[in-house]
Amino acid sequence: KTAGYRLRSSRSEVMAATVRGLIIDGSSLQIALLPENQDAFIELCTLCQAVICCRVSPMQKAEVTNLVKERMGVVTLAIGDGANDVGMIMSAHIGVGVSGREGRQAVMADSFGASQ
Image (tube, rainbow, N blue to C red):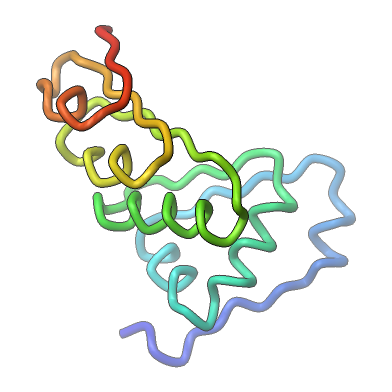
């Protein structure tokens, strides 16, 4: 389904903006996480002040966390409040599970827990 798609980086266009942000959904993230696109995706993310991944699967949350951890060599923090966040919390260096409406699965997998 995603074969043949490649991210095109236009660094000059991105750098022309003073405030940069990225909002990416699950289907677009699927393409960005392909091995041949990961370098361009990380480069684009580092040019932004904020990156928001929305409507993504639990697996994609964990993949993004691992990609940032491995490619950027930074300490990662993941905060989640449900079972769909467990993979991301466990992939991060520091995981915070928030106990609330969605149950305690995130808290059971975290480094630190908090209640809403």
